[in-house]
Length: 120
Image (tube, rainbow, N blue to C red; front, side):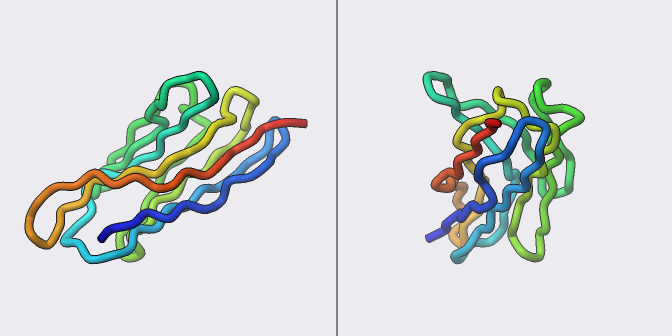
């Protein structure tokens, strides 16, 4: 069974920075796209950033220039560096990964979520 374990959330002041990490564990053949989603209270979950296995990235407009997604394929880990945080960035952040299993099936896996609070 594949699991994604997130870390790095917390409370930060406006203008501050945080770095989220998400590590995949378990038995699988490969990890394809990885991404970070967020969901604020009363809002739908939205894709924040994604990265392919080759390193191509995509960002929602509201975080461009402030957030950076990266991955370490050797460690099966994806990161989200968040700078210049503002209260609108406060949400539960979820890691997502597309996994190819040993039986050559595709599974989408979600982490448990990590809370980011932006407040003075």
